[in-house]
Length: 176
Image 1: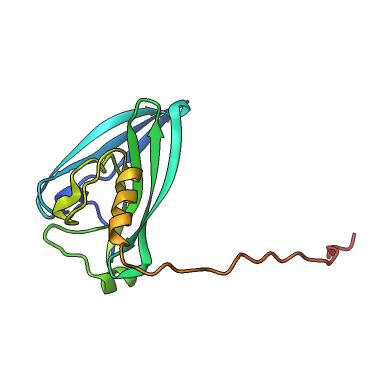
Image 2: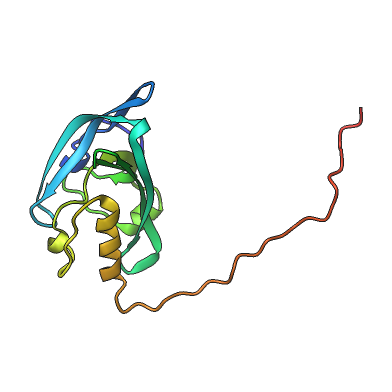
């Protein structure tokens, strides 16, 4: 598949973000702001925003496991700023208008991918996950979602990490 920006993209993926740096200021063009009315019905808007990198207060790595496949997950970074704004950045498949996600196709690189920059995470997500209401910055929304999504699942224990210390002295291989 040859990547292209000239397709009939799904409205929430119609614009690709770009970034301009000017010392400590970063301008992100095409920040996605979706307001979801239902799980499939939303209003997608894109806007340009400028962030002061000196005012970053938090960076959160968010992992959202796929439903029914907890070994696979969607990941994103969320940057929190002193003024209360958040910017979430992720890599997503880029669907054409009307196209549905297929896990097998996704696992075999059957989609084009794109970066997404957005401020989503403050909508009422009850339309997707009954009994769940998310509000506040993206991290608190996903943390609340994960508490609901993992109810009734067994905890998984992992062995403690092992540390291997080499007792060998490095050997010089170049003979000068």
